[in-house]
Image (cartoon, rainbow, N blue to C red; front, side, top):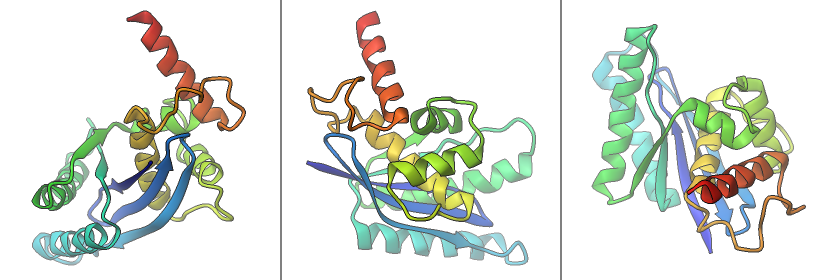
Length: 192
């Protein structure tokens, strides 16, 4: 069974979108990736409409089973947070209209899932996304890579209806990040 996840790194100027198929053994493959861009010179309603239209097209074209969106969080720049929150709302509403479940993941959760460390930088995330998806070149800009990382994170966290029982922390078919994630999951289960 393969899980198809559409990941969204929301933003008004650049909204990263990526679709990933993840198999039960956690092997992930990129289906599509892109960035929806809007100009700060346009009115807010026009910018949100561009994002809404693009998300509708992606949802209709790729038919994901779930949408993974970056959880909005920042204590520093309120205007940036507002724009990201508005873009997130448009994306979440589009999924809700179709009955597609939405999962929110924090940036540190995504970094930990794909790199093994919640404090990794964007370059490390892009590098590991490129490796996990077996891509010839890194997805650019970083918003595109972040959208793919969100999709991967959700599929791996989803319990991996994605992970078969024979895939454990020591499995050689896993990347280092997947092994770290599997080890953390196993440790959490033992602590219960």
